[in-house]
Image (cartoon, rainbow, N blue to C red; front, top):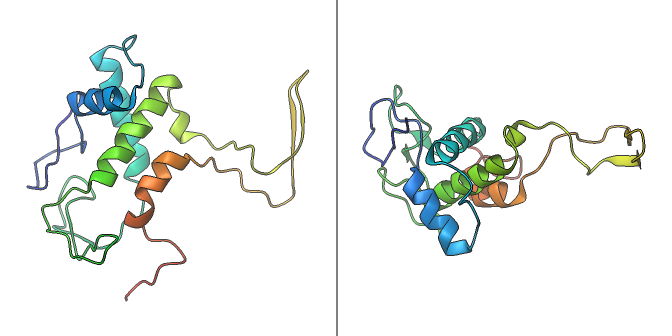
Amino acid sequence: MLVIEDGTLVTNSNSYVDVDDAKTYYDDLGYTYSSYLDSDIEAAILRTMRYVETRHFIGVRYTQDQSLSWPRSWVYDKSGYLLAVTTIPNALKKAVMEGAFIELGTSNSLQATDTGGGVKRKKIDVLETEWFEGASQVTSYTVVDDYLDWLVVSSSKAVRT
């Protein structure tokens, strides 16, 4: 069962979006999901939350004992405006819904460790893959990670200590 964090520190929250949010989003983008039950979408959202919640977000958790990483304080939007502490950014919600759609297609795909980015040679018959030495084997989910980009701490962002 999804318990939605809406910025008010909902006890035992486990998601930033619900199934209806996801369906509306998918409808708006023309994504096909009619072959999935609501329980499938819910499970995909929860698996995506597992992926999203491993990120190191900017700002500071609003309380020490909150269920999820958001809400947060000291978070500025892309234009430099301080977000209200009760804000759950739309980009975060979209990342969850996009990730859930990926998960609907292939369960646990957001947990993958294989990528084509460092492939030196790939043999299709008898399935053989050779990686370049030192190549990253972490899959990038561009649309999900793009939505999360400004919300997470990266090596190129300044960090205050």
